[in-house]
Length: 105
Image 1 (spheres, rainbow, N blue to C red):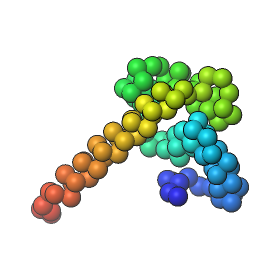
Image 2 (cartoon, rainbow, N blue to C red):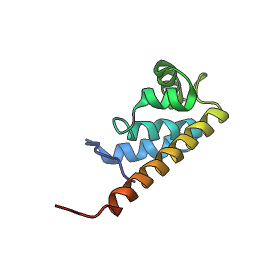
Image 3 (spheres, one colour):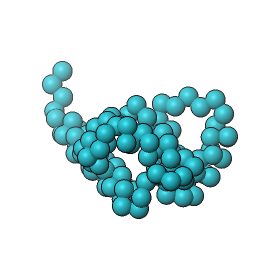
Image 4 (cartoon, rainbow, N blue to C red):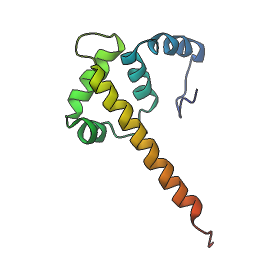
C-alpha cells in the first residue's frame, strides 16, 4: 500500500491498525482520508461533493474511526467513493495532457 509521504515511525503497528480499521466502511474512509491528508483539500471535498462545511466533514471523519453515531451513512460513503473516483479521473486526464505535450526545452 502506498502511504504517500507519511513518515511512519512504526510501520508494523500502522499496518495492523490499518487492517483492523479497513474491515468496516467508516474505518476504510478514515484510513483513506488519513493517507490523503495534505494531498487533497478537505474543505473543497466537503463543499464540492457533500455541499457541507469543513467542520461537518471533520466531525464525520472523527466519528468514523470508532464507528460511533455521526459517522458516514451508506449514502455518504457512496458520495465519498464517487468523489475519489472523480478526482482520480481528473488527475489521470491531467497527467495524460502533460504526457502528450512535446518537450521543447
